Length: 289
Image 1 (tube, rainbow, N blue to C red):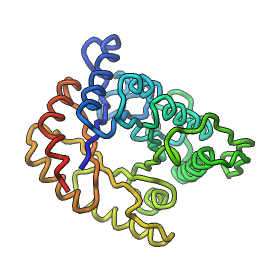
Image 2: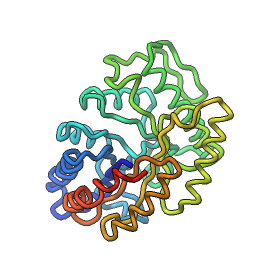
Image 3: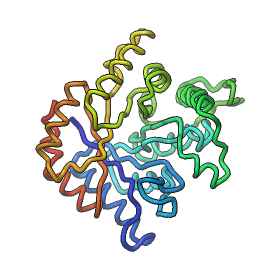
Image 4: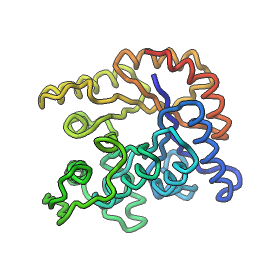
């Protein structure tokens, strides 16, 4: 099983001046240790409940561009971009730019968005849930078209693009990998089956993850897609370094479900956490599954 680092806490000593070193240091440690994925949240306000909306939060793609210049191997993405945050054509161009400048290391993580407060706070429309999922599907279609030779128009219910020109194209072939986050069984997992290269589910209940992956398999069967072509990833918010043996035992259970990447969240000093995680857990995690 492979590892990912999901950097979510910007409330660190000495902010904002300390943030460049913390972000770069964490990413460099992960990159040097062979961690597969480095992700950030896509929010403008820090999440209520996790911390407070007034706590520090960096814009995701700008921050990933900075990280790309500090690393050489690790894949980079947001876990996940809310579909309401950026116009689909501009989103495709942004991810393409990250992919080109990182040498083909960008992924597009996409979801239906949920944090209403930041939308209202900054004046960004926050449509009802059903419409957000309609926009999510159209955005997936637009990004795939912009990453294809088709430069023609796109006509959808919510988005209309006259020319889907995207030059230069991504370095990744055939395009940056698309990950859809979320476990909604009727809509989200159907979109994974239809459009995505990977899914991401919250860890914590192996049986619940198993059920959702069975639903994903059913959606794949309905459209004739081989479910093995979809990477299965999880986000585990628990501490993996306090009890590595228990963490690795849990990962064995997920590996039996076909999960091949787990992202963890640094706590405390992110550079120190990631260093310990890479020394004590990542080498053993590679043997799981």
